[in-house]
Length: 121
Image 1 (cartoon, rainbow, N blue to C red):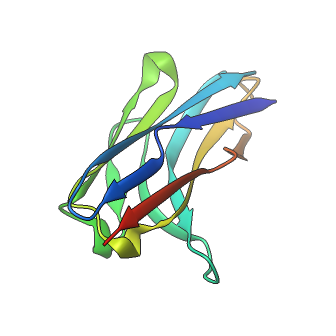
Image 2 (image 1 turned 180 degrees about the vertical axis):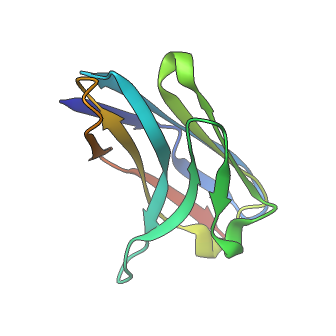
């Protein structure tokens, strides 16, 4: 079982910054991809950013140049630095990790509980 705990959400004015953190714990042999999705009210969950174990990143177009994803493999933690926030970034942000718990090459995705980010205009 892999557990993900997120932190760092909150209320910020447009143009401000927030940093989200997500720490993975439990039965972890290795983690491949980690990343963030978000879901705004009445909308589907959408990909925000991902990072693989080698540090390769991928971003949704709307956040490129404003958000930066990073990870600390030693701590099994992924971060999302969000700058120049806009009201349309308001959503619940969920982290995920694609982890192998037993070293058998079987990777499963686990999700965090979500953290609210609200950007006021």
